[in-house]
Length: 128
Image (cartoon, rainbow, N blue to C red; front, side, top):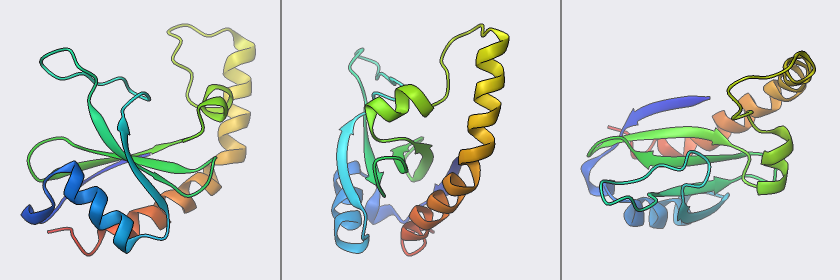
């Protein structure tokens, strides 16, 4: 699940956004390196994002696509749970992996959608 939103210009850095989220959200928020998508900047350094954790199984990472546009992406914040329940990064999958991914998606999707919507509400006040 992903969503792009435009935010007010006074929140156009990850530090300002993280400060706002710690004050306004009831979720755990932190600024971390983006190890989920492994995005890099022009210098080859790993980029940072703000991670919002509802619990070990539901979370959201937020980073800037451009100056005032945030990209919100659903993640599983716990690295071990992400390895088992996250999206497979393999290019080719065998039939067993495809079937288990479909079952896993069917079981987890409703809870993931609900958690994503709850975390998304935090951004309504700062969206333009």
